Image (tube, rainbow, N blue to C red; front, side):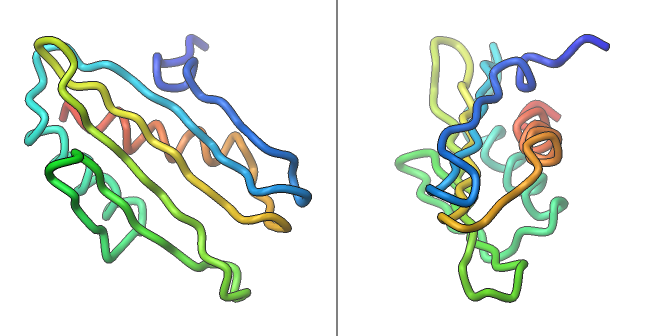
Length: 120
């Protein structure tokens, strides 16, 4: 199966259970206006179960925090949409704290559902 551009750009930083982990990806969208991308990205984040999404329109950034483990140690999702030529570049990073773990395949799929939704 051919991977999407978003899936090909996926990278993981950190050591599981030892250091904080960052799951990152990005994708360029030619001819996509930044405000449209931000609106679509916010809707996709809500669809993935995130709430209380903060918007920094000047920076083109959406940020949300979730706590799913019951540990009181939140995970952060930050998605940015920045003008790039005639289009928009979307970057996403999902951050978990040291001692936490996550399946990178699950994170890759979820992040790419959000990123790819920028152009819906």
